Image (cartoon, rainbow, N blue to C red; front, top):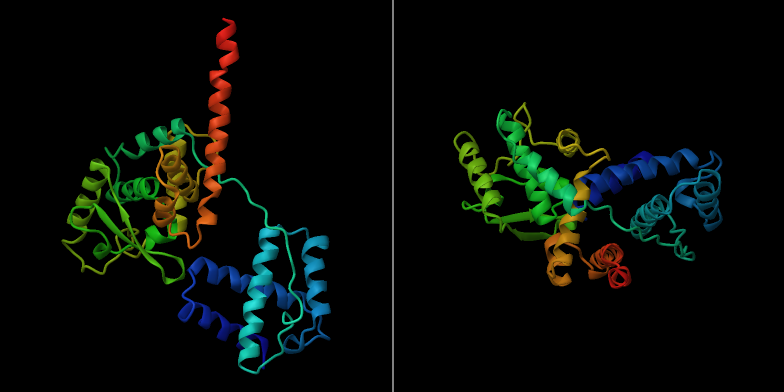
Length: 301
């Protein structure tokens, strides 16, 4: 079996049966191409050995210095790829006798501070003089901060996913897991209602909620670009991404006392262990708050 045919079959499997996100599909495609470029001409991909796998791992870690996250993802991709080939009798599974144990680095999520969040929201509310499309994107970005949606999930929303009063949003999450996000802010509800009212005048219920100038669904990269512009207009110097808004939503919810299980459901995490990383952020907030308070310094004055 040729590699490109096996790759195409695996990508279709991930898209149709596993229902992975477009981002994951693209990443897996790059991973398999990277592996094929590394594979020596004398080696056959359908007869790969554990020794060759270890050599590929050493190449990624020692020679190219790839990040632990990238290495883990590429090995996970290969493990799924060869498991499927083995199940279909098209190749041996080199992972059957080797289970690499790689360190999992837990990075604290990059969230905006309260001051930054307030400044950004203020810039989102400046709809005067903006195009209709910019106003729609601002509403979408407010939704990211309020609910912690992923940018891909925002771009996948259809008109029918939002309730007529703007209070309930049905989110199509990763791994074909749908969930419900609730909107509490009256201003955001009104913004969603206004967006629905205008869009429903000319399109069907299954039309995308956010569209570009060509009438096509808004792409995540377009949202990222507009967010950077809005952040610059708000006087923010560091690079702001949509995923930082997701982190900000989770952090603020936990800091205000929302049960971590509710935050898990809102974010669509399959495991609460993923959500627990935000408790470390609140620990950091506690540290900085205590440093500002400095009780002993207060007693000395």
